[in-house]
Length: 133
Image (cartoon, rainbow, N blue to C red; front, side, top):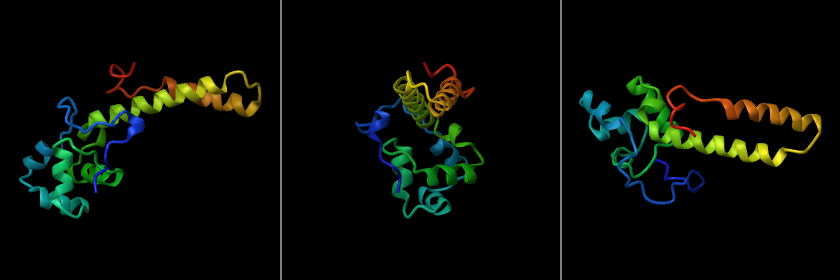
């Protein structure tokens, strides 16, 4: 079943905000597939999960997102850009927080962690560079 919004990503409220973006419905319809047929293709039990994802009431699980990507030959980033951007921003925020917590520890292990976190903090996917502050 599709994943409900996760609180750590700031998704405590229902996904009724129309700014959320999913391109699943138009791509599914392009091929004339019903929600039930598409659900079958991606291994979801019923069309309800597809309906909830398309209505922006739930995010797809990781397996569902990958399956959608395979069936539609479209990267998950392009199918679910808002979800990707939210997770991306969350991870960068977490990396920043951990980086700050580790400051001041002179050990070699911590220095390696800080170097890695610096790399994580500077990464920016080309599609998200302008979205991530």
